[in-house]
Length: 439
Length: 97
Image 1 (cartoon, rainbow over the protein chains, first blue to last red):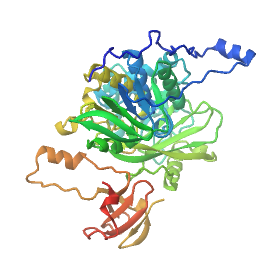
Image 2 (image 1 turned 180 degrees about the vertical axis):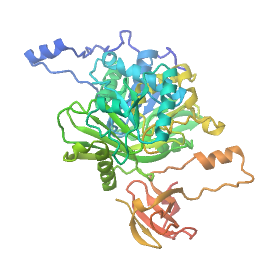
Image 3 (image 1 turned 90 degrees about the vertical axis):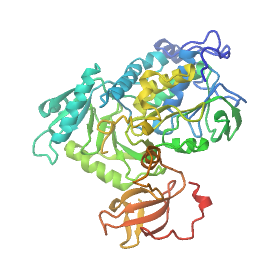
Image 4 (image 1 turned 45 degrees about the vertical axis):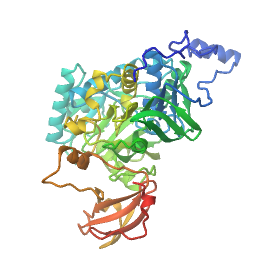
């Protein structure tokens, strides 16, 4: 399975922001903005379209942040550029464009904390690495505790976090009120805030920019991204992957990586690999923009809500997943009502704000609220799935680690705990207390 | 909004119900091997299509019911009391699960 540097399709000049076959790399810079502003010169295309080839070294299914990051790190770190990213709709149109863009690493298990912290580190350098402004704002992340049980979990998480070198601590309600004055920290709230897990490196990012930045950088290194190309089947012979049938023709490939998150079961069914996944919609909503008043990301597990304010001033809300499995992307009134009720408990002063829109994304929930990454019983069929409600924040690290797995054929230590076999061996990585809200 | 036509109470909003999982799963408590337990506990069909499932009418009659629902658009084809045989309108070819 290992490809190493044996691939011959890499151009000698390929590097970050490097170009392929003579086309100049489109490096973005302040000077270039000025120059093009004066000369009115067109910006070069960020992405190119390609004819679908008959064969690739690696086929990645799903052009979301995971698929695109995997392709980018395959090309950048391992020189493997004969790669196709196959997407049935448009890039970044699934969970990668529907999440609430929160980045953090204050998880509950040492395996989880190490893994997500690597992602935060990669996100910190991503704008420079990709030459693309991803607007990462490390404004701080507060997980509120409204009862003794959740305060105990916050202390637990803080101690695990500190052992892994993560900036994370429990603060009391008074300090919470100092950081976010608009929160109701009085003790006569229906669910009084007793304290919070404070995680200063956490924050929000512009998720579309991350998707587009990875796509552009991967494309410059020679990776092909095929949008509106649906995978119809996966060919196997003797327990090994041999290729992929798509709506635009058949491809032969020895390695196929499933990065389809909410749709993961439908792809795994093509090779008869049963997965411990249940797909639930997760809804989110955004208000009209107002002046900046919310300086941190606020999460309340007890109230099933999280909120942050974007650079444009809109409040972005998320909640827990819908209570029954579905692939439907329709919003529901129950969600809006519950959201409004809960958020007004926390921030009573936003009662007159109007919701602009709500939407849903698909979450492939696992039994232990940790992802599933690595090999499957079908040789050459790799999975990067089970991303539930925490996929976007892990995009860079899972892309990096999956690329290493594809290139070397060995599961990297950082993702070894998240293998599919853990469900048979009873090695679950329980992140229920830290993965999201309302579970 | 998903409305489930409870055979005991009539059409009710899905918020009154608790989803009780895919139908058709069973295990032999006394004799199951670890691999069988794993399949029972952790493996789900999770199809995009018609799925047979159970619901608990937790805020209503507090009885279990069974239904067939399309997970793509949440259309409910039939609802019957738990343990009742499925109506014959379903073709298994269509379920695809």
